[in-house]
Length: 134
Image (cartoon, rainbow, N blue to C red; front, top):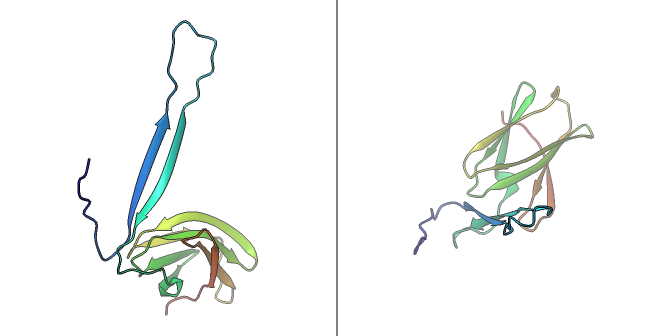
């Protein structure tokens, strides 16, 4: 076990805690249903110097029928979905700090209205219009 955790101070760190509950077994009780429960918890270490994500710092590039989201922030950003002309595309993915995520969509045109929705630190939905980097 770690006595002192060493995490980067310039970005968030994602940690996972997995807890598995396995029932005891007794050979003489063969007509029982055994259920194994696995709980997975997501934790973030956020250095004191970081406050909260600014979703305006995300950049977008169009690559054919794909949108590349560039995360220029020190935060993990959870993408919920994209809406293109009122049609919703579920994404449910996370972009790690200073990395990018490419999302395939159906045909995208220059005059389409595109909105990206993200899940905030408190579980709320934040929607932002998508404008492509030129």
